[in-house]
Image (cartoon, rainbow, N blue to C red; front, side, top):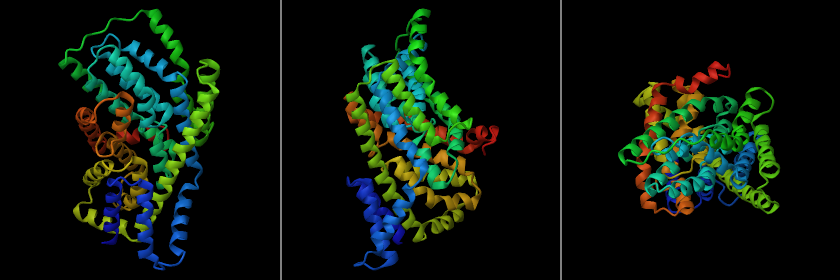
Length: 432
């Protein structure tokens, strides 16, 4: 019962407003005392410190601050505006064209930042401004802007998949490749809903842009759009590792924003370096403490107990994945995806191994399921970020996000029923 009590305590502390890292640290200390005793000695703090440091002392995690910085530089240096202008010109003739542009721009920007928050804060502000200028309904605009940001953690490079790779000891390159098809499916599903809404609300059709206008905007957006290609080609061509690819992304972003577009000032650069340092420190603190909590759960025997419970219900991999999907969706409602991945991966991996689940398929589906939590209360970090950026009431955001949550869950069900949608690309490239 102790692991269950500690887990419920962790959930309660987080829902009460306590920082995730602090809540996980407190729960880890209590669990450590139950394991090792010695309430007045130093053994428990030393063990917690060791568990924490062991997990964050990993070369792969260096990719996280680099991708955070790359996304920040792209947002500040005028890249997002040029990117959105180009994709908006491509879909301008369609009914509700800016809604489609919203999804497409987020799809491309995801290949630069790997973060939903970076998408909302930077590109989301550009998207909302453009849609308001064309008199799109605020509810429609806010819904598609919030939903399209989910592509950030799914399309490679993905910070959450890096976290999973560290915990599950899987190849980052394989996971990145496996996430491409699910990301495309999610984008197409969102665009289908946008098309339906545009038809129902009788939004006006746009006009065809001139070839010169499209060409001019394409030239402006070409260099930023090469970023995902440079990253992925370098990784799969064996030129550099995922961590080195993140550093290359930063260098490329610096070249674009300072020498090509010349919109990034020294003051802006210092601000983005400071923001990256703060974001990284916060994230690493969360990773350290949640990792310690995960190790404590392992020592207390929670994974073994869960294996017995789940296998007792069914040993069918598909049924087990649907059971786990329910768990992931619920956890995503109150916990951010990265700490959730770090806590759940070591706990649930024995279940996956016991019934023969593919660990790449397992990881991508878990990452996407937890990402849906960004659109659901009470955490819904994307919704809170968008409220601040676009000044849209939370009630409206909660309401318009529901259809997109349903769509995302439908895509998840498809990925569970057809594992090849996740694993086909890695197999085709001989990486799995």
